[in-house]
Image 1 (cartoon, helix red, strand yellow):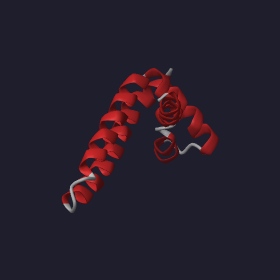
Image 2 (cartoon, rainbow, N blue to C red):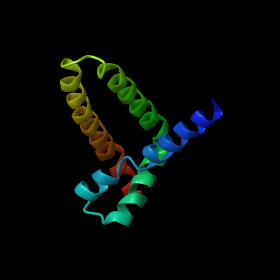
Image 3 (cartoon, rainbow, N blue to C red):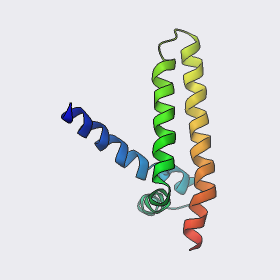
Image 4 (spheres, helix red, strand yellow):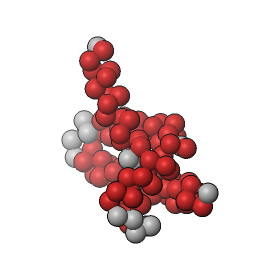
Length: 100
């Protein structure tokens, strides 16, 4: 049990703090290393919200995949929707971090 707990913590911690790397590269024209720093700075202020949203999206995705044909369609929609949600979160909260 504890091994699995450490495994999931080891996956979720980097996922939360590096969730905005793509958004920093595309929206702010940062290079790869600056985008890691920008993502970490934006995520450390809002890590609870990001963790909750990421967990909700992953739980829904896990349950939806059991539905044969509709599950694939809903999973594709959910992945696209989560990208939009995290991009909007970055635009709202990531810009405030850079202004300070």
